[in-house]
Image (cartoon, rainbow over all chains, first blue to last red; front, side, top):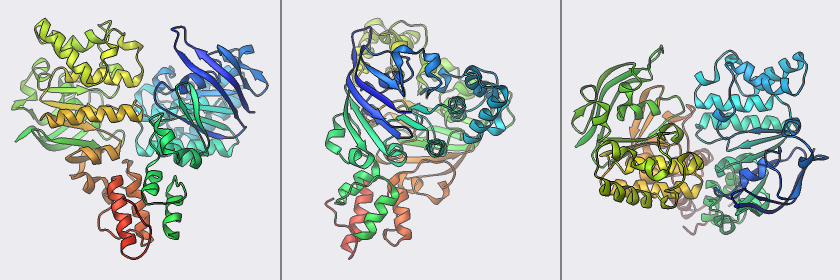
Length: 266
Length: 291
């Protein structure tokens, strides 16, 4: 299942023009990070992918479905969306019930729901917390419940809005692991993030947005190395990319392995 | 001179079995900039609440030991006296915003209203504080119509306007983009330079290294270690416990195992990393740096 966006424009009722002509194809199974300053249009863009917003002009297609022709409830079969703030999406009294809500509403049989829930809880390391009230968990674990409740819907496309905000290092590693597991299953993962090091270490393709438009779109190394262009949307390159540049590396490096490989060869 | 003095503080929230803080002893000097790091659940926010008097005055629970700020002891004080000395910007601004005010301007004035500041002075202080944090243009908006990053600025501003002696900040930039983070750290530094005592909980290690005088590592309710940013943030003691680490530190640690980092200390900041790797090339091998 791919995503095709053509000349997407969106103006909020207040008159703010949030998207000014976005054209984009994301192929099945791709891992894409979207970066850019607050107000660049990142969240507005991804809210078009599950029909929460409808284009003012242009179109968004999820596989063969035009989002204008399908309800949010129907699009939820193809696109899962994890909100930035887990408290905006959690409402059940027990983690297991919360995570079962999505797949149950998609009409899976109770055996299938059970299997999907079990799998999603295992992936997010929540298997021992099935009976716990989500609001008795720390914000770290509530975040994992939010992830699990969307993963359990088994959609081909999963969107994360700022998954690492307010998370500690241990949980950021857990979230990176979830993204890797989804990748191995052939899921498309689209992530909005300000955490540029997390972006560099976990995504192969990076899209930089600024003022409702795409500034850069390409392989992570090609995008993250463009310090001057990224500065226009107030994104600093990753720490190791900056260090490599300062040390005069000819190649753009974005993670520990790449950095050490160049260091060894110099 | 210590403006904050905690002696053997142990605290348990109501209806819980384990202590959120265990035997915390901590002094912070007037004008000092102290950062608190630790994984989620380490007790960082509880420590902030304790400094701000919410523990135990609001949250109740059992507390032992003494908490002293600016010569007053918490157990002997009322919350309404306490807030004149200590201001806390909450981790989640949504929990801080009063809900009683329709505009950002009024929200920021709320604390001053409740401490009987004259109207004209109040207006001036609110305007100055909003200017400082770059939200002058948000004055007429509803606090609830703002983005997370903007709400965090409002939360910070409503504390700064009170001009507390001790400023306690619980992840004040967690919902901000890099430019917002940079601006807010600029404001915090300005306050620190003016002599305000700053106690900051933060995951963004590189910023801590560039700003803080001292770092305290909290783990499972206890102080694991404290010292200079370089000393604490590169310590082996923090490994595999969920503490954030700068990529400069982790890459230098890996390089050291390959014989490609020769300095005794590991770097936390870009400048320290550049210096260390450049010195490597000057000693006969490795990279050529322009830094």
